[in-house]
Amino acid sequence: MISTYSSLLRTPSAWRFLLPALIARMPYAMLGLGIVLLVKHTTGSYGTAGAVSAAAAVALAFAGPQTGRLADRFGQAAVVIPGALTHGAAVAALIVAALAHAPLWLLFGTAALAGASVPQIGSMVRARWAAHLEKSPLLPTAFAFESVTDEFTFVVGPVVATFLATGVHPAAGLIVEAVLTVGGSLLFAMQRGTAPRRVVRTAADAPRVSALRIGGVRVLVVAFVCIGAIFGTVQVSVTAFAEEIGKPGLAGALYAVFAGGSLIAGAVYGAVAWRRSAHHRMLVTFALLALGTAPLWAIPNVGIMVPVALLCGLAIAPTLITGFTLVDTLVPAAAKTEAFTWLTGAIGLGLALGSTLSGMLTDARGSGAGFVLTLAAAGIGFLVVLAGQRLLTPEPKSSTRVNVTPVTPATETVVDGTPVNAAPLALDR
Image (spheres, rainbow, N blue to C red):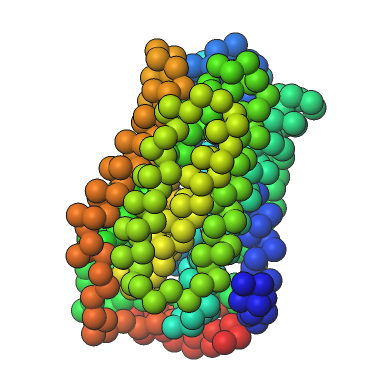
């Protein structure tokens, strides 16, 4: 396993985009919690804080795929740079509005803009791997590496945001989030030589490729909404469970067990050369996820919760990795970043929906009811993948003609879809 990841990380030029990408992605999980902590401090209402945070999550879920599509069309740097600067300004405006006790509409507006402008670095990194490792057996390992990175950021980010907001200043978590996001994103955008080739389509190739026109992508989007709902319901229900047993301080540790199981499974899963097709593996991993969540609603104590949470977490990363692998086989190069972004946005949307619904159920009937929603989300996801098996089977490559032009720091001129004086792609193969 170690040798597999070692081979991946020795890929020429990989570290040039991985390091700035890590900086930019680290605060991804800090935004929502940072908003909750700041708005709760200034308004005194968890309900208002949660609603403002949900506005950012929903905006991110719907705007993200559009920025991904623009990145496929115009290049990643052309989208990341203005997006990062807008995000920094939006977060600053949100902080000022909250501290000044501005009207709620202004809090919702600035939060939505902050969410909509989050640079989709994770999706863009996956697109770079897909271009860099085209037809390489290391590509599934790369997607596994990215899923492990995502899990790492979701473990570390909330802890850092909470420490800063409670130990330094209520706005400190959001300030650090904005600084890391803007700085890391700009550094990432500078690595244009490792960016995937931009596909320019001629008038004869119209209409333009859209990831959602592909049935398999629509299936995966719904399935990933269910995965996000699992995340959201687990976060709320674990917190309620810890309070019910009189140990609220254990909530973070219990959630870390879920994430830790996912991280371990993702690392192992990505190092295996699987023979079974990805759409079959997706069905199996979702079935395991449903089985893992089944007993959560009836767990009586921490001693039983820890091993069950670990086993449940083991199925999460393999499901995510397989979904991203399927996107690479289903979607043409002209829409890959958009497709990856639809999946990450679907997770965010599902998380917002899951946390909201489970919060309502938990308030009324306790943590067990919230965990029932976790099982329901996993079961629905399994049924969606089962029903969509045919759509998740890659079709033979289309013979549609496209003109592929490299994305270079220099300005390119395109006449009738044909690049003029285009420089070669500066990417080691």
